[in-house]
Each structure stands twice: as structure tokens, then as C-alpha cells.
Amino acid sequence: MADAPAPGLSVIIPVYMGAATIGELVAALRALEIDGGLEIVLVVDGSPDNSLDVCKELAALPGAPITLLSLSRNFGEHNAVMAGLGRARGAYAITMDDDLQNPPAEVRRLFEYARDGGYDAVYTYYAEKQHAAWRNLGSRFTNWCADRLIDKPPGLYLSSFRCLSAFVRERIVASYEGPFPYVDGLVFQVTQNVGRLQVHHLPRNEGRSNYTLRRLMRLWLAMFLNFSVMPLRLATLFGLGFGALGAVAAVITIVEAILSDKPPQGWASMMVAVLVLAGVQLVVLGVIGEYLGSMFLAMNRKPQYLVREVFRRNAGGPGTGLDVERPKADTRAGGQPHREQSEPEA
Image (cartoon, rainbow, N blue to C red):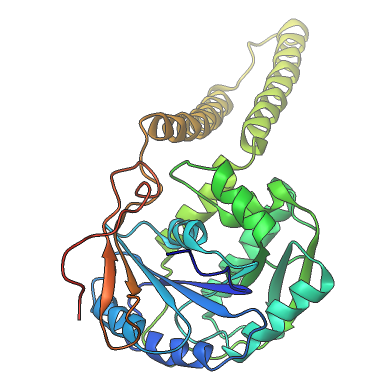
């Protein structure tokens, strides 16, 4: 049987601890009228709650078709997004969180803005963010760093609620197989034809944010180390700066020793200089070590993600169960899927 035609829009949603909200989100998305049709790609990222069971029930219901990916463990949001992008088929793909802070009604407006404007990518921004103060501060710091580390248009806010064309989606999936993806960095390696659209941001009604300080640091390091050589250049500048400072201090010490009747005093200042220089050296070595560690993990093929199972509503229609695909082993995407011939899930 021939594959169904590609839809106009794919909506990709990483699901982690989202059992309480994903049903309402999917129902709202299925109620949208999208030119060319809609598909939903749910990526359950090793969630410890019953999110997978809830998503399987949603996939069997009537409405826009759902492709449900179950990852073998928790890989992180950007890895889960890459898994979803690899399975999406739409002319455009929108990525969004599962927490209902982005109103589903904005999905159609974002899609039409990207399509009608001819943009390769559109990022959303908010008049007022409904996140905790520390998270907003972390977002501002990440965006400030992104202005300097990657080819991001100045002032563009990097939101997880974004729309990508098939051109961008296909190229970022094909271009990066490493274990530390940073979706925005990959987007800006492909295109500068980027738009921005203001949308509403709602308070979180269920649970709490899955982004801890540790997760934000991991995301920041993925951008800092995997998509820029700026840290290495900063290390070089640190070395040159402290080398010049040491040369000036050496000249001053020699002149003082020649002109003074007493040997120069300076044990305390010497110890301070030794400690500062040692600290700088350790920081530089740490930066180099992070780069080497990333290269080591990539060369040893640490997986970007592993798909355990893929669920889709079977050809019999709603209420007839799910077809299950168990992909073959692969270092990134689980290989090419093959259809399991056992009884479909109810």
C-alpha cells in the first residue's frame, strides 16, 4: 500500500512527565483546521510516569494521526526533538512543549506566518513569560551567549515553540549525528531566513518545570562547546593577556632590583600571582578537556537517541488498535523501522 501523502504540518512534542496535560493538548491540536492536514509526533523521553500509556490511548483515537516514539531512556529535550524531526513528514514542523504554556490555538497562526512569509524558520517570543524568575534569568543569559557564539540574528529570542520548514528539518537531521544536539545551533548553520512572531504564554497549571539548573547547564554547555570554537579563542586570549602581564611584572621587578639597595619585597604578591595563573591554567585545561570529552563520546558513538518502539493507529481505523514498529539497532535513530507482525495492541 502506498504511503499517505505528506501533511501540511507536523507538530512535534517531547513528552516527559506529561500524563496530566498531553491529552488536553492533543485534543486541542486535533480540533485545528490546518491546510494540507496535520500529523502529531509524540516522543516519550523515558518518562517515569504513565505518559506512554496515555499517549498510546491517544494514538488509537480518531482525529489527526499520531506517530508515537518511545525512547529507551531519558535523553533530554533537544535529543527528543531530533527524534521527532527524523520521523516528521510535513511541509512544516512545529516543536512545542507538553505543558500547555503555549496555547494550541497559536499553532495555526505560527504555521501560516511561516508559510505565507516564506521563512525557513520562525521563532516565537512573549510579551511576558510565565516562568520562575531564575528560569527567565537563565534564558536571558543563554540568549546573550547565543548572540556571541552562534550565527543567531541579534535580538532573536530562542524559544522551544518554533516552526521549521521541511528544507531546514531534513538538513539538520541529516547533518548532525552527535550525542549533544542543540537544535537552534543546527538551524542557524542551515539558514538565516528566520522570522519572529509574538505569541501568548500561559501559566503552568499542572506539575512543575522539568528544567532544573543542571539541565539548563547541560543545554548551555551543548551550545557553548559543540557549536562554537569561541571558548578556545578565549583561552588563547587569557594566555596572551596573562603572559603580557607577567612580562610587565618581570620588567618592573628587574628594574626595582637594579635601582634598590634592598632585595625586592614580594613573597605575598608572588604567591597570589602563582595561584591566579594556576587557576587560569586549570580553567583552560578544563575547557580543552570538555572539547576532548565531547569528541571522545562522539567517536565512541554515544547515541543521540534510541527508539525502543514506534506506535501508529493501524489501517483498520480508530478503535482497531495500534501497529507497533520495533526499530533495528542504530547509534542514533533506531535504524530503519520494520513492522512487527504480531497482534496489534488494543
